[in-house]
Image 1 (cartoon, helix red, strand yellow):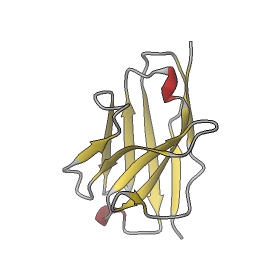
Image 2: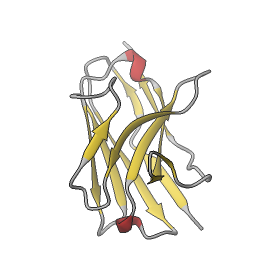
Image 3: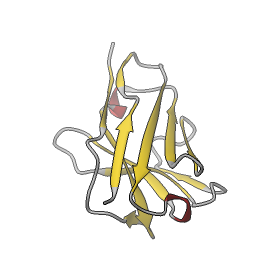
Length: 119
């Protein structure tokens, strides 16, 4: 059974930083590209960042380029997202999933982790 457990969210002031983690299980984590996604209230789930299976290449949504960094630890089946210079518009629930091309691979999502950027 595929499972994603996201953590690390919280309340942070504008300009602050957070590091999100996603522990994945139930599939061969190390052979799949992985991605972070986010969903703000009343909006669809959007792409944030992706990383190739070996961690050698990354891609970011335009709104987070230069501020967020995605990484992974294949030995521990963990995906990370370092978020710096946070803005109020980054407020959302953040999720991870494997990638199938340019779309999420699995229909089952984790509970996500809430990130709130506010003064």
